Image (cartoon, rainbow, N blue to C red):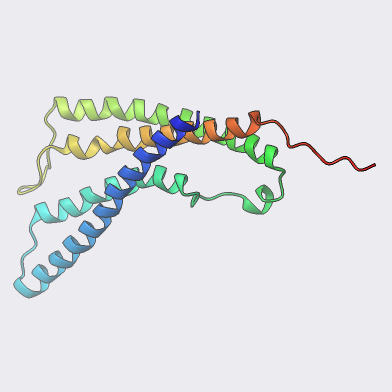
Length: 172
């Protein structure tokens, strides 16, 4: 089971690296846009839309990446007091809930993305970017990735729950 967890988390890590790259690109684009606007009084619509488009992979791929690195919001003041097996049971429940919610939203978002593709949706603004379905594709991808991270968390917790309890020393 841990081999499956490792593969899922390698995928989450790779797509998290893509999200980090998008953060850098967004900073560079916004800086360039500000310079162009104030120095040359130019601000192309496509550049502004690209900035907005970069937020999607940052947020949607970053959700699973954040969960993998345990930077999500938790009730740690309670959780830290639990025994190891109790923590694993909580992690199993939360992993299963995360997987179910992530996959359900990915399923709904996939239909939404296909609809955008079918109508050839593009920017309504003159000079805007075409192929809006490409950016909408990050919805099912991001939530599917979140669901996979939920599966990985569940499998890790299940492995911990299935481990035999360590033998306790018996003193006579």
